[in-house]
Image (cartoon, rainbow, N blue to C red; front, side, top):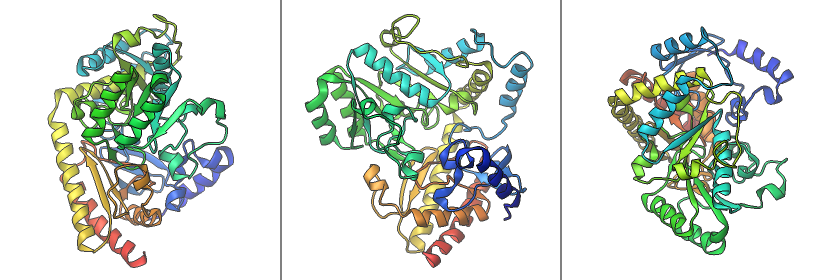
Length: 432
């Protein structure tokens, strides 16, 4: 595998962009190499500037559940491009996308489109404060809800990988009303509410965390979050930016049988284009401008390109429920195959999987929260990543990210992945 052109491009990029990238994890520093620069994607494969082909398990960090360049999505985008990309004015496709989401998700009466997951979570919290008249919010160690100031405390994703959980540039006054809690720890969340409950506007949580690796809530903990927020009059916000329409058509909330007060979306609802959204009960959403006093706006919010790509993707998923069964089956085959290889080689690893999201942690501890995730051997993961890349398998360039399966992936790709994994793990064992 040669990366000559990619290396040249990276050197050029570093002259004009901080670290040579527009999002930190893309720099590949945690896997101790320079990144390949991607030229195109097709189906379940991506191709870099040097002509290398990879089975793609990143999928633009989750949204490409149908694979790259799905013909129907591409067709819809071409139709939109020919009529205009953005107007900063209402369009019919916004309504169609919103209607499809509202009709599909029982907890959502109304929805507001924005441009990113960060915007969605940031505004959902502002709305929660405006609705409740309270100041404090609770988030969980290792959950990543974007890079807005009040949420960059013990964050996951790039913040975790790069060891900067409390980012410089975030004033203490901004985060003084953010309380961090321990994921899946009932006693901890009960103590927090006992102390601060009357001033807690909302609890925001990833029901299946994807930025400290894949770590799901236990059903018991999810149920307690719902009951304790109701008891104290606080809102429960599910951050389903990653899990929405991914782990099931109705998202993680359908797996837990819980109706959050607000839900944040991104990724899949834009079909691979920049998007975000948040929605919930009408009485809460009615507080949002122009109906109510809580302000939010965005020139590109609900732009026709993202709405068409998202609407087409969601429509395909809704009309083809077999897709989710196939994704789950392949996820199970991959996870069980990796586990068998690890056991056969006498190595130590922990596995978490929910549907088409999975993660192999290089630790022998069950990973149920941020603290357990941090016991992972990141040097071993880096070596494993590099060995897999050599063999044509593109994984997330961080131990603390999810592996995503897409619908374009067949049994043959899973087989090739497991063959590559056996060779790569042999190298990890030999060198580690």
